[in-house]
Image 1: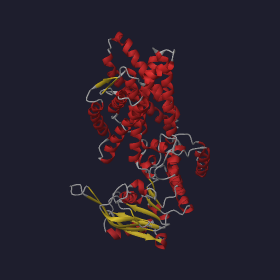
Image 2: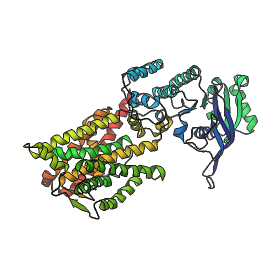
Image 3: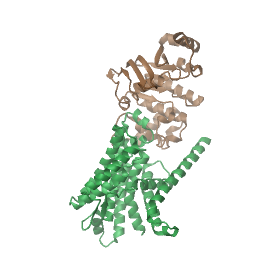
Image 4: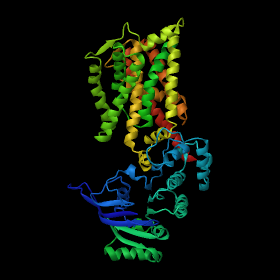
Length: 264
Length: 298
């Protein structure tokens, strides 16, 4: 469904700060894949997401979504196909606006005209959509989103993103800024949504156990390359230990930041 | 006296609504205002003098301001200049353009011609001049305010509301923030120019430098309003901008009339206005911080 061919990204080319963030990455994401991505800091995980979502353009290579050439299509146009959730819970919603206003913005993608879709019928529909979150948000449609906790905001962002039925869901450590209880809650919700709506998703995580427990395919990145791509039965047999061993086998060197990767 | 302040305040409220849209909704500190305010006055004056009629003059003034706003947004969007600089550049261009509009003069008097103001006063019949004007301005600003309220309840308006809050969210939801900025700044500067057009007719002349310092005055009005009412409903938010504008004009009136007790002259008012903005910002920030602490304790 999404095809990256020989994608590379160089930051600050031809300067002393030149940095090859993504090095000749080719990747095909199949419909229905739930891919988890691990790698140390600076491995290029978020840059890869930025390239897929269009907030950065690659220095070389090509990217196709549904066989449509997307390499240089700006982010807001690709958003039709892609839903993205960030680590920072404040990036998914507008704090100074009410919950219902936020839901109006997310209820359709693309330029919005002078229609007024916010009425009692749509409010009722929003309430119904919020009820399964079991957070009492269905009664707080008129409250500003800024009054919600980080966990609630991230759950809301996830719900709104899923309801727009993106072809690809990009999750950039979306539980890392939450406390453990909320993180677990949002993660379980993510799994449920992906299964229920049969979504295709990619999830960056620093938690090896999550990377192994969730999804049907696992990518490991290092120094801007995908150094491991396992799926199916092979992924089910993975453990944290074998994953670390595999990494050392491939790279034959010590991890720059073991702690980040080994936390469970 | 009080009706004079109210008329002044209501004319000024249109500018404050424009400043509110750029500063508060778009989070775009748009300095075009200082130029587009005079542009509105100049276009209206020249149209009236050339006999285009009051309605056409007013509409053209609005459009002129909107074009200026669109120019600022486009310079910012396409040439990637910082928003402050884009506004300053267009504002400076407008100083020259305004003199061109006025036919190579720095100002023009509206004597012995029918303006919106003389028409309205004529319509009022035996009612005192200021009261007729007050009723007219109340209706005029009321209608504009309601139109703005309606706009910000549409899907487009709601999306624009999120832009100043969270530009990433706009992009994630497939909307081009550049388009939103063009629409928003056009609307904002259109209102500013409309305010200038009415003020020019009210005081009987248009001046190329009419807008000097207007941006800070508008900002002061927006901030004063924010102390009056707290709400997240657009109906209340625009109402408080209007009230803030009237309150600001009231304060300035008293400053002008009673300021001499403390050896203040009218030329000090710009100083006072800027200090007012600084004080408002500091108070608002400390209130925000207190609110944040309350929230965290919960």
